[in-house]
Image 1 (cartoon, rainbow, N blue to C red):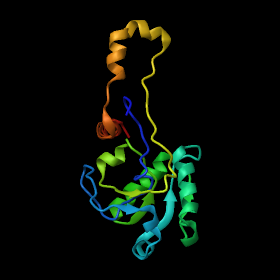
Image 2 (image 1 turned 90 degrees about the horizontal axis):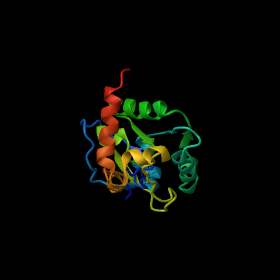
Image 3 (image 1 turned 180 degrees about the vertical axis):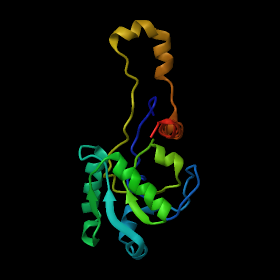
Image 4 (image 1 turned 90 degrees about the vertical axis):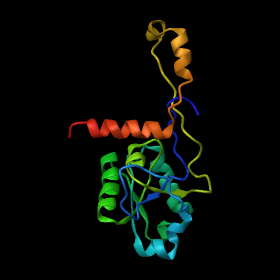
Length: 176
């Protein structure tokens, strides 16, 4: 994985929150699939609105394709675009109210640090590959930074857990 890697994990394309959790994300032992959303338990408890982010985001395009491919739309699931605040707010309200919801998420991202989220496998590979972040430096700054430092920075790998924690810390520090 490249430095400061940002990837969209197939297993987190849709995430559920069946119970409220602690302040830190822990790995869920139960693995479920997107296909399980049409099972009897999910159909009894799961809300059918899948609240996404902006329509141009890859996760939004992939979510719509997944709805159709898994025939989730045939049992009433529907995807709506919105803002990150719409998507993240819906998730946090569902956790507080102990409701079951489907939310398209990615790694790294602050919700993954703050909450225990059940990640769903997407075995058909409809999310494509992993995204990667790359260090970008303006040409006029290269000389100021120096070749040795640029080389060391290019090998820096923080990982999703650390980047999610940093994202969460920045959001908590941001004035409301």
